[in-house]
Length: 337
Image (tube, rainbow, N blue to C red; front, side, top):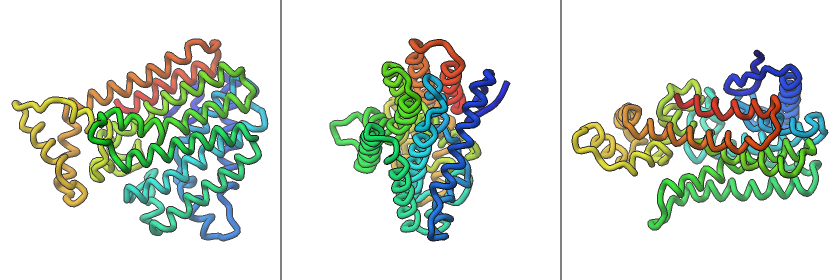
């Protein structure tokens, strides 16, 4: 059994292992080249998150989707680079908006330098992604631009918050569909499209990417509460501290208060305060949320989305790439356990 890609994905087929590993190595080398600048300081800041590592989940999906056509087609690796550069750029901007001190187990760019440097570095990465994208044809440009619009719309929706008439949980799912699902869907679409896969396969894998992207983000939500930070690479409870209502908190808000449980009442009281201003209150809220039934229900919701993604793969021909995509559904969900 060979292990490739993020989450310890196991691939038992020798040819698939070879293709995916070669593709991922080519993407990594291309990412390093793509962020080089004539200005040394820009190279340092733009390389910061690449050097910090990361799951490379999106490039992996490009490589697996490309197996349904010609995985060696010339557009496959560049399209993976476009998706990952775009993702990295959003991380620089996210850390500024979240005032996050840590990203991928290392100081975030905004804490190592400052907000202006982090924002401009993200812009630089967007520009480099556009340069690579320009060689992939007008259809690729349209796909990426549509996804980028959805990504930004998702961020704006998150920043604005739900309207009084909106269901907060439905609003949140719309947010992550834009912020996370859109780009992961593009990763699958690019891999299949650039490899010359049949159109129905391109469309099916796009839907799969959208669904597993939602599961991926919901798993991150659970990890932000449940993990010690090693898995997520971020400070635990970051969303909680910043007052960002993610899945566990939104599920809790939907549950009726339990008058027999004083911890339930205390947690709800804490969630109505400014946890960013009080480290002790933040730690208490995180501890109580970890023990609350809402966290387990959030785990079940994540599993449901992962299973829906898995079911979408059923019409695909049986092959090692299909088995690997199915396993990704399992490993995304297992991260929350």
